Image 1 (cartoon, one colour):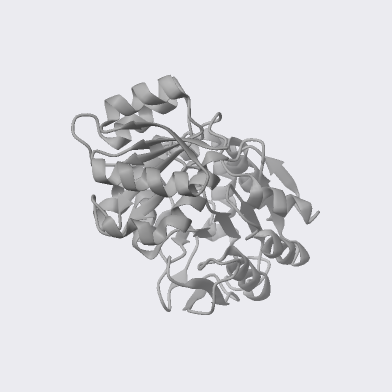
Image 2: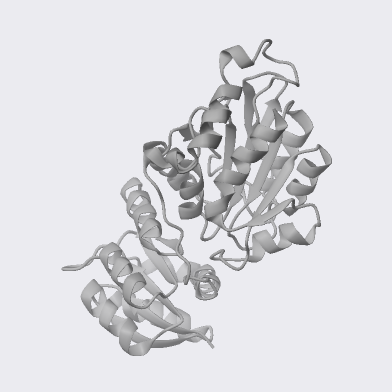
Length: 364
C-alpha cells in the first residue's frame, strides 16, 4: 500500500488527484493547499510519496520541497505546466530534491489531467519507491577543482602539442555517454560539473525527458559546467570539451565518428524500451561508429535502457561504469546494467568523475 499526500492550491485539483490515486489502490493520507501546510502535513502523516504543485500562495512548491527534504526526506513528484517556464521550475525542483515531474496538460488547473490518470498513478508508484535518503549535491562551474591533479594531467594529454595528428584512432579524443532516467538530472549535473573543460571529452547525455525540457536542461548544465553544453540538433557536430543532451523528441546517434568531430544525426525511429531518446540507441551507434577511447555511464532510472548499450561499449573495448544501485534514486537501470556482467566499475555518483578522468588518463 502506498500512502500519499496531495498538495495543490486548487481544491478542484486536490479532489481530482485524490480520486485518481484512490481509484487505483493508493491511499491519500493528507492534503495541503500551500507549501507551509504541505511541510506540516508530511511531518504529521509521514507518507510514502507527495504530489506537489509548483505555484502556490505563500510558500511555493520548490521551497516546500527544500523544507521537506531537510526535515523528513520523502519522495516527491512535482506537477508542473508543460511550458518553458514549467521546465525551468521543474528542474529547480529536481535540484531541490524532488524525484520526478509530471505535466499538467492545461496549466495550473487541469481538468483533462484525468485523461492521463493511469500514467500519473504509475509515476506516483515509481516515485514512491525512490531512495531519497542520500542526496546528490551539485557543484558550481569550478567543480573540476575537485580533482586538480587528474584535470591537469587530462589537460596536458588533450593539448594540441600532445596530439600530433588529428583523426587517427590513437589520437582521437575520448567519447563519454551518460544514460539516466527518473532521479537522474541532479546526478548528471553533479558529474558533469565536476569534469574539467580541458580533458578533451566528447559527451553525449541521454536523459529520459520530454522535448520541452531537454533544451532547458542543457542550458542549465551549460551554466554549471566547464564543458560547453547544448541540446542535440540535426546535422550537429560534437567536438572535444563539448557535451550534448539528447533532444527529447528524437533518438540521437553518431553517424560518423572517425575524426575529432563526431557527426550526429537525429532520427524518429520507434521508441526503444518505450522511450525516445533511448540510451541503447546512442550507445550502439557510438560503439559502431566512434574511433578512439570510449566510456559509458548508467545512472538512476526505471527500466533497463542502457544495459544492452553498455554491452556494445564493452565489446568495443570501452570502459563501463554504473552508479551504485544502493544510492541511486531509482535502482533499476544500474541494476540491469550490472547484471550484464560487463560493468567495470560500480561507484557512488561522487566517485564517478574521478573514475572517468582516471580512465581517460590510462587510455592515453
